[in-house]
Image (cartoon, rainbow, N blue to C red; front, side, top):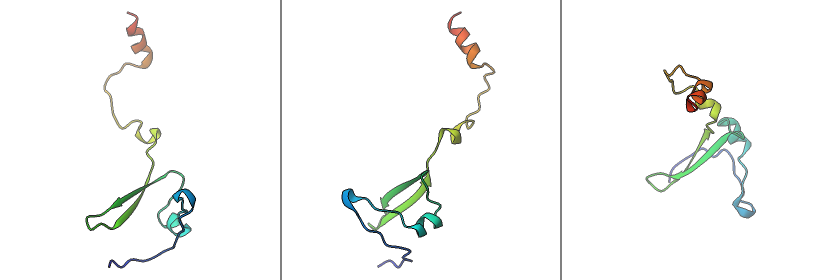
Length: 80
């Protein structure tokens, strides 16, 4: 058996809903922008990971483009 620190317990409600305990929300910075990933490790034990949602604002500017044209010039090019 794997030993672990138990921080809190939750109950499963109708439609299999549950709440994330305050201790877990605070410790792992869980909020409305958090995605919970459920999985199983190689030994068959349940695993849970928290990650933040990726928003459009997070990815804007990641790809650099050396094309100096702007959207107005591209639109004009369509009609030429």
